Each structure stands twice: as C-alpha cells, then as structure tokens.
Image 1 (cartoon, rainbow, N blue to C red):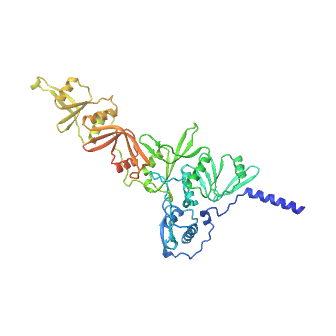
Image 2 (image 1 turned 90 degrees about the vertical axis):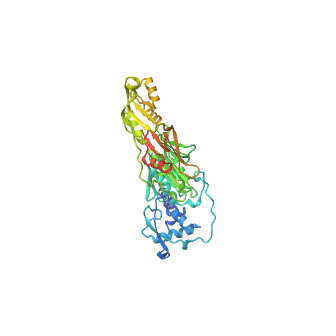
Image 3 (image 1 turned 180 degrees about the horizontal axis):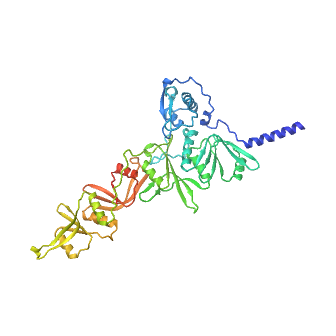
Length: 490
C-alpha cells in the first residue's frame, strides 16, 4: 500500500510540474531544426567561397532561396551547415544585420540534380501578391519572424524571441515559456500575445492564463500559416487593433493628399469608437512596385506607416531621390502689389515702378493729365499697368484706346485674386484645379497617387503650378524629377 501511495504522489507531482513549465519539440519546422544541428568542420573549402555584405531586409532563408534554390529541406540544412562552418563567429543563423559580412559557399557543391517546376505567383495589376494563399517555400521561421518583428516594431510594440518568459498564476506558481519556441509580442495597448508555433499548449492552459490575465492572448500558429495569416491572427487577437484588407482606396492628408489603392490596413479603435489608420502592409511581386521613399515619408507625416514587403525577400528600402531636395520658391511679400512684382519676376517680366502715363496732352487736348502707374510692363506692342487707386471709367477707356491695359489691385483682394489678376494682365494661360500624379510609374495599375490643388500656369512654352500650402522638399523633388513639375507657393 505504501508503495502504491508513493507512486500516486509521484505521478501527481510530475503532472503538476509539466503544467508549470512548458516544453516543446525541437522539430516543429525547418528553421528550428537548424538550431539543433551539430556542425562539422572541414567540409567546405574556403577557396570555393566568396564574401557577401548583408543588405537591409536580407534573411539567410531568402539568400539561400535566391542564390542556391535548394530542392529539398535536407539540401537547405546542408547549406545552413556550410554557412555556419564558414562563419564561426555567427552566433545564430536567425540573427543577421545590415552591413554584416558573411562568407558564403560557392553554388556548385549545392547545385540541384534536377529541375523543379514552380507555379507562378498570383498577382494583381498593381504587382500586389495574393499573400493569403499558401506558399511552402516561404514558411521558414526566420523569414516570417523578420516580417512580424518589423510590423510589431512599427506599431511601437516589442517582440521577445530569446530567453524565458514567466507568467505568474496566483496560488498556482508560474508558467515558464521558452521565447525561442513561443515568441512573446507586447503591443502598445497593453495586449500580450503568445505565438504558439508548437501547437502543444492545451486549451485548459490557455484558459488558465486568460482567466488570470485577461490582456494575455495565446495564438496557435501552424507550419502552413504564411506571414500574413500570422499577422492577422496576432493583431486581431488584441482588443484595440485589427488587420483587414482595404475595400476602397485610402486617402491621407489634404494638401497634398496621398491616395493608396490597396493593401492590408492595421487600425486602432479610438476612445470615441473611431478607427485610426496606423500601418498599411502590402505584399509585392518585386521591387518595381515599391512606393517611393518621399511618398512613404509623406504618409508617415500624416500618421500612417507604410510597410512594403517583397515576397521571398522581406522588407527592403524604398527607392529614394538621388539629387538634393529642391526648395520651393515662396512669394512671402506682405502687400498685393509686391506679390504682383514677385510673380512678374518669376516669369522674367521686369516691371517699371511709378510710371506717369499721359492720357491728355496740352498740344493735342489743350491741357495735360497724367495717371501714375504703380507698375508697368511691356510685352512687344502690348503694355499693362497695375494700379492700386481706382480710376474713373472714362480714364480706363482712354488708356485702352492708347494700347494700355489697366489692372486694378486693391488691398481688399485675396492673394489668390491678386495672382489671377496678374496672370490675366500678362496674358498667361492658367487653370485652377486638382492635379494628380500616379506612383510608381510604368508598372501597369498604379499603387498610389499624389493629388493637390493648384493654379496651373502656361507662359512661353513653360508651366508652373502655384500652390497655397507647404510641400515637403523631397516630395517636390519626386514630382519635379518624374513629371517636371515646377511649384511656386504664394
């Protein structure tokens, strides 16, 4: 009886201990298996290797897929093993950083013996990949985790993938999680999300955690889940955030306004129940479809983070502008007459100031009468005078009979009215409206649009856009470089 009693106590104690400390199998998916490999030396000769500098967005998984194209998980393991052997200071094959230099093996030892057929990716006209469909070649944890980490960081959250994480349970002790197997995501709203890649945490343990800590959410991840599905499970598990497919174009800001056609949108519920757009995630076919850096920075200034991901490569730097940013001429003058002068100078029309215009001559009419023109410009045989003081209608008629077009500018006029009167006076063709420019160029259906209100002016085969708002210099550089847009702020 004593022996059976002792065995019963031992069995109960062992069960309790296993419920307090969570262990997981090391063979959950390929990337985890590599962490347990024993790497042998002497297999790869250094003369068959070369140096490679890691770029932002690179992962070992994407490099191996691109450079070696392994046709089996076993061959991928062999390449991982060779890289570890050639780089003994590499502490983890899952942690590489931009600027790091690695020695990689030559392609010949790992060449595939047979060609394998690949299915084309499903894409939209804008180059967006249907990231919801499964793609086994992208299911390595280092690739998925690099994307998850970037998205979480851009949400002002953190993710822990190393060491232990302890969850205290009142009157029951604590649960210890291995973060290498169950990453812990902490979001800015206080949500703590446990990503269970092992699928071995029981429903009762999930309930026990949530009962004691309602801000904890345990999300089960299967090996077939791609990066988008993991993000949707993770973000939608929280109370404050949601991730969903955009149903209509997203408009950002006013002057200028950005419009983005499609993507996956992370939103946050405000205290008043409104949805605040936080981050836009788009999975792309290749780098041709990336939004320009100036466009992305403008979106960020309006509170939206744009995350472009290229399938198989991860996050990459968006294309920037090579030239220094342009400054926009600003007509800062305080009076309307000075505004007119600055605008005339922009169009290379040098006005004469305070000119006496004789409309009656003593020899001809028996008396002299002159009118002072605040500004006078000459364009061939045409003369235009700008004056601040009102003139009698008969004087205006006499001036026109003498080939002089009088334009009255008063201080009651708005700056826009002054601009339009000046343009009319010099015979410029102009049209107010909203003008749109699509990005990126020459890739089929555009992903984004830059829109802004302006007065478009054409004079002497050149054109300008006159605006009333501030425009970022880098965004202006993009408009100028791609569409030869010349802006003037008045």
